[in-house]
Image (cartoon, helix red, strand yellow):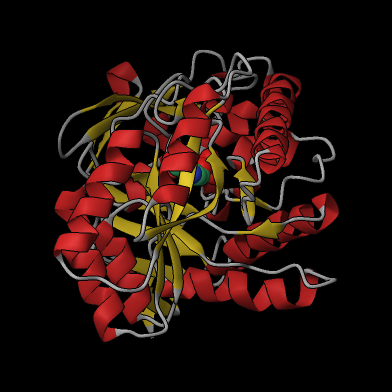
Length: 392
Ligand SMILES: Cc1ncc(COP(=O)(O)O)c(C=O)c1O
C-alpha cells in the first residue's frame, strides 16, 4: 500500500470520486440540454478520465445522444488517444499542414481512426487540399469550421452576424476533392473573463449558441449541411439556457477537474475541485506568519486566472499562496478571509504536507508526468497512478 506520506513532493493528486461526480454532473447537463458531448481532453490528458466519461455517459445520455468523440489540443494528444482506442478525435486548433504527416500516419496505421481537423480560412483549406493531393490521399478529411462568436482568439468572426467569410470557407471545402465539411465549432473562452458570475457567462453562452445556430441555418439555406454544430466551455455548459435545435453538441474540458477560477466564475464549488499539488512545508516564519512550501511555478503553475493569489491551501480557507517562485512558494493569510484560524506556526511544522488547489488545473496537470490517484478527499492511500500524455 502506498501512502501519501511516502510520496516525493511536489506530486499531483487526483481524487477519483470527485472526477467521476464532475463527469456525471456535466453529462446530466448535456442530457438536459439534449445534445451530444465531445469532451475536450486537454485538461486531464488521460485514458482513465476518458473511460469514466464514456462509462457514465452510457447510463446518462438517452435517445441516441452520446459521447461522440473527443477533442484534442495537440497532435500528441491525438496520437496518445488514438493508440489508446479512441477513433473519433477532433483537433480543435486551426490546423497547419506542418502537422499533416503525423495525422496521416495515424490514419494509415489505425484504419478505424477518423481525424477531424479545424480550419478558419480559405487559405488553410487550399493548403490542406494541395498537401493531401501531393500525398496521394484518397479518403476525405473531415473539417470543422471554427467560429468566433466574440472571444477573438481563433475562428471566423461572426460576432456581428455576418457570414460572408464563413460561406467562402465552407464553399472552398465543398469544392475540394480531399476534404469534407463536417461541422461548426465555437468555443466561448470569453466566459472566463466574466466577473458577473453565472448570469454574465449565460449571456455569452446564449449569444454564442444563437450565432452558431443562425450560421448553421444560413449554411443549410445554401445547401451546405453541417453534421455537427458544437458550442461551449465549462462555464458556458454550466450556464447556458436551453440550446437552439441546430446545436448538436457541447465540448467542455475543464469540468473534469475544475479549479479556483471555475469556483470564482460560479461553475462549481470548492469541494468539486478534483486535483491538487501535494507539497511539504520546508520552512516556517512565525514573525511574518508565513511558511515556505516545496511547490512553485513548475509544479502548480503561475496562472492568476484573474483571482488573488497563486492557489489555495486545501482545508485552510484562510490561507493563500501569496508568492510563487520557480520551485517554492510562500503561503500566508488571505487578507480577505472571513474568519482567521490559528497562526501558521501553530498549524504546520517542518515536513507538514499541504495540498495546493490550483487557479487553473489544466496548467497544473500538464506540469506532471504522473497523477497519484486517491479515491476521495481526505484519503491517505494512493490507489492508482495515471500517466497523462505529454507535450505536443
Ligand atoms: C477549442 C477549445 N474547445 C473547448 C475547450 C474546453 O473549454 P473548457 O476547458 O472551458 O471546458 C477549450 C479550452 O480551452 C478550447 O480551447
